[in-house]
Length: 177
Ligand code: PRP
Ligand code: HPA
Image 1 (tube, rainbow, N blue to C red):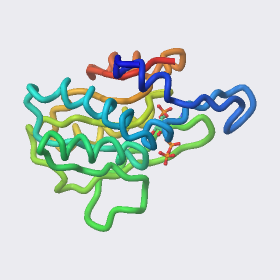
Image 2 (image 1 turned 90 degrees about the vertical axis):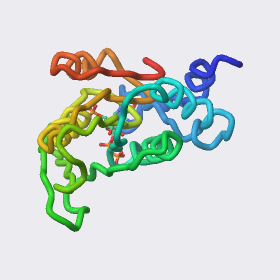
Image 3 (image 1 turned 180 degrees about the horizontal axis):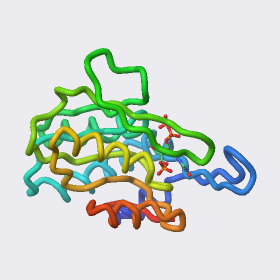
Image 4 (image 1 turned 90 degrees about the horizontal axis):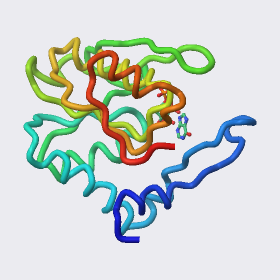
């Protein structure tokens, strides 16, 4: 396969009935494990953003860190972690969001960026969009201009990317399932 998007799509592993019956889990670990595929993935993002004015990459705990930090490095930008609650040591802002069962929260350091900075927000996957939306709210509360919400995978049937777009965010994903 030479088309990098197809290479990534074909390397993602589908796990039926995980973590519960009826759900097909899209597992990106084989993409990370294969050096050619990992590079293809990162290069898709690098080519998309190399001519875009961006100041900073923010990645979402935990799988957004893997892709986000490599992308930041390749674009010669700094990286900001958006973490699950209780992990960041300095002053933070917090946003709660809904999971399929119950609630979760993400946090960011209050000095993570300066107002007006242009930020790429990166995660591995958009399902309901709740995580990405909460993360984008944190960035916006600090005055960021969120250039795009970036993911490897979008699950359009779950409506997350639509919801993010409705909130005014640009959304980019490599594969849709
Ligand atoms: C997964 C995934 C996204 C989020 C997507 O993370 O990595 O961050 O769910 O779902 P949503 O669009 O419905 O919010 P998870 O919460 O499982 O955490 P992890 O990265 O620590 O495994
Ligand atoms: N894969 C990975 N992470 C996820 C998924 C999935 O299918 N659904 C919700 N988070």
